[in-house]
Amino acid sequence: MNFDSPLAFAAHLVALQSAIERAEHAGLEKVAKLIEHDAKEQIGAYQDAVGPFPAWAELADSTKADRSKHGFSENEPLLRTGELRNSIEHEVSGSEAVIGSKSDIAAYQEFGTDRIPPRPFVGPAAFKNKDKIEQILGAALVQGLTGGNALDALGYDLTTE
Image (cartoon, rainbow, N blue to C red; front, side):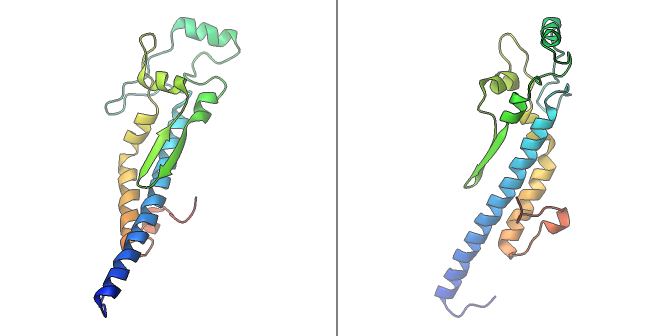
C-alpha cells in the first residue's frame, strides 16, 4: 500500500485496529460458544480424564439410591432437572471471554469439595478444543488484518451468531 501522507497512514492504522478488534470479538464469541456447548454436552455422562483434569468418579451408592428414589436415572452424573447444564453460559467483553456458571453447585462439581470428588466440565471443554480455539482465534486475527474472511477455509463464519 502507498499512502499520500502520514495522516493517511495514521487513518489506515486506526481502521486496521478497529477491524482487528471486531474480528477478535467475533472470534472470541465463536470460541466461547464452542466451549459452552462442549461443557453442556458433558453433563449426564461419565467423563474420561482429559489433560490435567481427572476422570469422573462413579456416583456413590447413596447418591444413586437417592436419584432413583426421586425418579432420576442412577447413572447420569450432574444431570437431574437440567438446571446445572442450563446454567452454563458465556460472556465476551473486550478481549476476554468468560465461560462458566454462576451456580455454586457448578463450582462444587468442577473443583470438588471435601465430600464430593471433582467432576470438571468447563476446564476439559476448553482443553479438548485447544486446537480449534487456536484455529479460530488465529483466523480471526488474519481476518482483522486483511479485511477478508479467513475463516471460510476452516468452516467458521464470524459474521453470524
